[in-house]
Length: 477
Image 1 (cartoon, helix red, strand yellow):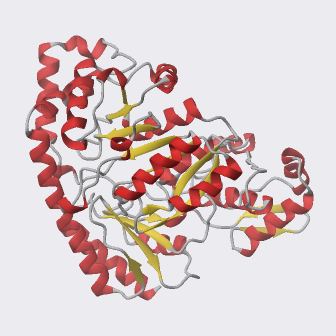
Image 2 (spheres, rainbow, N blue to C red; image 1 turned 60 degrees about the vertical axis):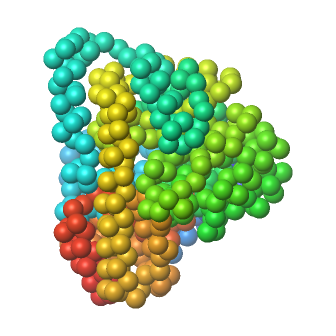
């Protein structure tokens, strides 16, 4: 079992160890009754004292995650929320060790009726028919597209259209030669982490943070420095002290209707981040997955990249969430030597994203269809947000939340800090309901009494029925 110890971190070693083991348990990577390494073995692997390992195991035992069998060892107690595999001949694989520390995507059942755990748009709100017709037309005109590799950088026609799109919608002037097409924003984050960071390097993130980005940084042994947020976004006043102490190479932010909180960073805060990047020479990785989904024109903000004059910002614009999740298209904009680094990593990762899906969305971007579609999508999601807020406000008094002005998500805190969020999730799963535990959005918290609701994926009827039932579970819990 691979454990990462960051000696420059302010978090005590025993908590670093216990948090990583707890994340594996919550993710389902460690199964119920699975034995943990002995004190001596883990101490030798990490080159730290047995007393530190014992303290970490005591913490896990105190928090109800493991049990100690005298003379036998320490075993996983906490039941995971995914379906357990039956005993079979593949159990030998567990003995080889786990190099993956965590994954937010293992924390929930995949198939539930009332799915509030995924920030994905309800399929009927997306242009499925148009994209299907365009794909069929492409194949009819030239079936060889299925046997043709796309370029590593991405289809040139698509990059030209995306460059126009960025200018019209985000007011970002760009050269299509500096755009790389990626298979979604998630791959873009992965590319940057491989190109810019090495194990042990430091990265600053918002706290709470998008869990998928945390998965990448944690599993690549990156030292994560979480910085709390206020109503204007990540607190820039805390960043300067961090740079004097840790000298991080990268700041990852999701500034517009942030996932998971829904907070939108103020324009003043965006400019402050640019000033800090120029002063200390670090990269800002800007994840713009939700910037187009604003519910009022007055809350719309320019991307951080808009203020970037010296190429400190690596900008990723996602099209999957608002257009077609199955297409998996995002665009990464970067200038300077880092562009070549990203290109090289992309080439070694998949030799280029699929050409068919890139060509399929071209007609959508070239016409007014994209503008009209996004306008309708904003209205539909605003109605879903309003429904969610009304039900949660009227059906229970045990939740606290801020109303987001855009995006797909609502971040909820439970008034009782002692409530076990995974026990609540288990009860919800039994009623065919899912949500994302807040633990998935932190790198060093395992008992956070918070969770994220995504109001985007289900139908309006399912949204109402599922939320009312969830409130009943919370009230009775």
